[in-house]
Image (cartoon, rainbow, N blue to C red; front, side):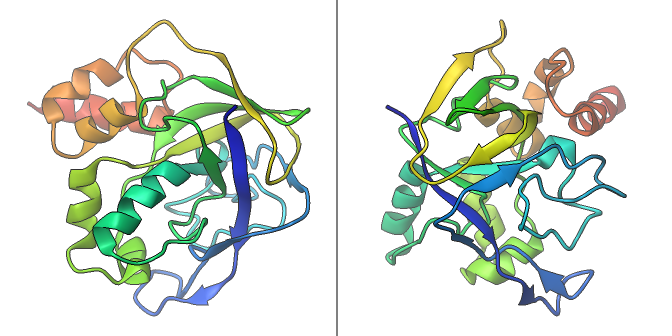
Length: 219
């Protein structure tokens, strides 16, 4: 059965190249339950959807549509083979490291029940940034991550509650469209011809739909 391999929270690190000088991208597994809640708007809200997790660059990260970032352990294992060294859960900055879920193939709007309480909904994709590149310290990292197209997914909180490593994850509903996490990522990066497919997906984060619409209408 699919499961939550670990729940990861931030360890603040200096980031001299960033816009605020500190980053929470270094996330590490914790061995206790973590409360998950809707954090509110990106600017002026609580930042992360996980209590005890910090987001410092609020202009770019956090808020309801980026409340929880999930990445598949299977994709981390793929990257381990590519990079030639171990990658611990949380190293990509994910709050939730999953096992047994095809995160890239998940549909926007798909809902996951975690443990006994929490319900999350896939809302958006992660686009690699310079902070990520500085943290990973691999040459041409943004390009390599983009070409691999294994972005992980941002989820919004539908029902709050507690989660912890080892909790089962159940896909409880899937919307009636075919726009996956992978399709959104490819549309926003290397395959702009896919952008029109994003415009009619109401579960996709509004900011991403607006961005896609501007690009479609500009062509």
